[in-house]
Image (cartoon, rainbow, N blue to C red; front, side):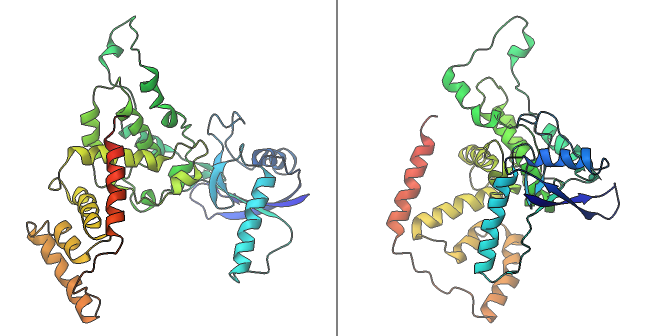
Length: 341
């Protein structure tokens, strides 16, 4: 079949543009196969990274039709199926119903990193943020020669999911928290961080949790958008690992520790009480810390006045009819979390 590949072309610090290449392809060909064909047969100047071609090294991460993925894993047939599903949804919503009949593949570099050339990005920030979480086991056994540090199969199994990360950059590319906050270490780093928290050999768990309990760099900067989970080619589920770190921090801290910890604890408490959030109490308890934080209390004033003027300030609160069910669900989850893993 004939497919048009629109490839992002850019030299460092220049304005990018897309260049089109037409290929005769088989549905089973991977995107990386197609890029090789373009480079070897049509334009040798196209730049991209690749190595193993077997979903192991993570080198060929790029945005394929708007989604960060591995070029060696995605093939033409599956991508066309995905694009057709999107087109059908757009047609149903009357959005751009007159699409081109010839298939088009759009290939762009990973996001949140500057472009060096075409599909090759500078991953310095990616590696620096990984280094910031100190992703190495801290154990006295490392300093004792000729000694094994054994783990039970159960303890080792806690590391399986995070150990699958191949550092391809897909999650980092799609992270909107990283996009607005360059200090945020990113989902890849925090997934690796949880691996150390869960490792029975590591002797710095408490120090690590303190380091990860940061507003701008640590777990609380995550916006929980789920993009990292959706694009991870190895099913590491970085958001799930970030949530596990948060829970360990919450288990060790009270509501007076910080506003973001108070936010989480008050939210759960109010939902258990009323089935949903009483916004009046939520603002006072979180932002003003139940009138302990005068600056926080004063910051609520302008917002409260605007809401009153526009008739949007809730004067009362009516609990949900399903409050007992919601409470029982939350308590069931809390009981599961309290069980030893």
